Image (cartoon, rainbow, N blue to C red):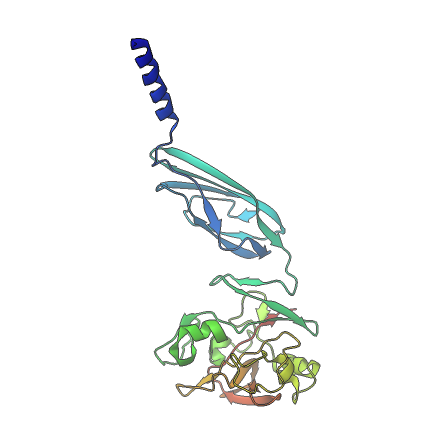
Length: 306
């Protein structure tokens, strides 16, 4: 009988010793992007359980290659497929996880999505007439909702139609001309993502000519339908994939013509107070070449600097 009791006690001890302490740390992580272009960044997010106290990462192909941050940011400059490993510890021990072929890095080709490393926003790209355009209006910077004009303070300030940031998400942000160019009229990269520039008046004219000329180009460049554009959205086919959106504009602190007009800045000034822009409308296919006050806040569409 005593022998049976001893065996039972030993068995219970062995079973208990095989069970993991419920507070043992378990390593895990995720990333905000797994497919990127060379030169872009990935934010890694620790998902480990049970309160890890230290983190040791290894990023094959990345910079930095190792990190002890909980949620590191890593740049990948060379195309390839890379593994990532994480070891975490707490007072009970450690745990490791390796995810092989986790990050896929490719050379940029027009048609790839790009990541704006400033805010991790993803944009599509489209090739039109041998130029690579971002398919969405730019949306970066600090939301300016106090009505004050932006200043040259090294902070990108954006307006959102009706001071509603959801409109920046849907239509893109609105910028004054000087803010767009960072108060340097010769710096045509302006506030665009790295490797992209503000199109000049000439480049925009090349696009419009390729789309059939100013009188009909709007149809080929406007987003189709009447979900965002007001009816009748005349002639809209978006056959070139530019997808112009009716984002309206801000003039003298008044928001105007959402769903009716799109105004895209060019990088060219007309004079000290005005700059050239392109105007799209819901009720015709024309794109109007116009000069407007630099203090108007309008849309920005970037293109690859090639």
